Length: 621
Image (cartoon, rainbow, N blue to C red; front, side, top):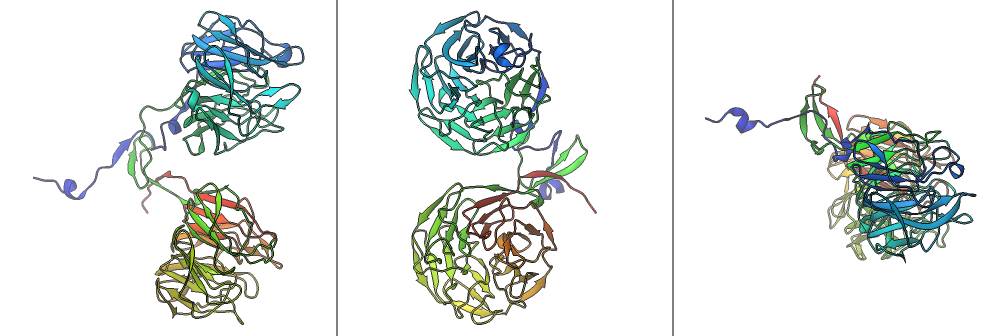
């Protein structure tokens, strides 16, 4: 006989730890065996967490007068003395699959920290001099691959030239290969394969956050690390690596570890000891890394091992589980207050009062006012792929301050009325704009929300401030209930034509009111915390709306403010990096975008709002 819970119920997992985005996200650092002697800025490192080599380096600052030619081998628990380098040096590059098959190349040496090109291979017993690098270099550079197929990249050559060039090792000689996009020294390099190398951070005239990946023929710039640093360590390769330690500027050793999942960097467990100039595991993995020695203010013998959990449950939005460790029921969700803004690719032409349609990763941006151009109002249309903007087919008529389908798609958008005041409407099919059914009443600078086939536009100005509302069903416009508050320079809105929201205005000063649309009538909603005009919205739902930017004061000045409406009230969240008024928004309250605007000149900036998945305790009240 079936049990009721088998028919109607569901199983709730019992877990000892919270769900996580990846095994690496659960990783922790633990102490390993101490080096036999303090060492920092090694000539090179090779191998993995359980078969590692660290060679050369310095025993105490300054490095150029305390160099050693010693090497140490690690077996996963303890270090033993290895063979001596033939050339004493520090701050070079190394790679290799293990502590019995390694390559140490170039580096700096006394006097005066001169750079060299000497290359030595290691067989587990002794170092042997082989072919020199084509380009002498030092000041720490990246290395990846095996002792018969490797690559080194970056570094610095006399007198103080940052290098972009890379060289490929075939087991007997070096060949120049594709350059890095950004020349720099003091790079963290890693990659167990020649075709999966990664160059993280480094130093030009200051610490940089640049990251590049190598596919065997060319370097590609990818997402930056969160904190610009140099002389850190790394393990893994493209598309899964960790980066740890390093310096922000002299004397600011760091503990942070960041994880690369092939698209973005997230912070995971910190090192116990802040340091820079460390030994690393360039043939290790992101789930199993090694950090040895380094400079904490003085050279250290400390070794730490990074190990990811072999037993974890992947985070799954909406999942409910019982955490036996904390004795609590939990749910995985995206709490909007946990979101942050991050800068992305710049527009080709900065402007405000434009229209947008689409999502955070696939957006269309059209029309607007660009004061730097003549005429100021433009027909320009640009398309966003989540990283960069590309110009596509223009509008038929230059316009700004329009109604627009911010919740449409990149291939299905609508632009209605605008400045100059007219009733014209244009529809976008993914490749071109076509004139469509005209609006009943021409105006500019109102508020709108919806899609190409279901949109609502309200307020604006022609010869007076307007409360008129018109609804589009995909073929015609119909006048519906007036808005209780004239919306001028309101710009944004969110939701659908059956449940929408608008906020702010500037008919006679900053307005803090909001209005809710239920499909047939408007009602006044709760006030936003800061009255302003030209607000951009990211909202697919009336009860989960993000309002960002907007103009404040007299004369109007852009703001970076961001507020969230949860269906009941507004709360202030993390600000944008760039103040903006009359920019555009699209996407949702968990994956939004802010484009362009003024402050006071026209902006090319794009910012993305992202809310990470998080585990929250379920409470009953």
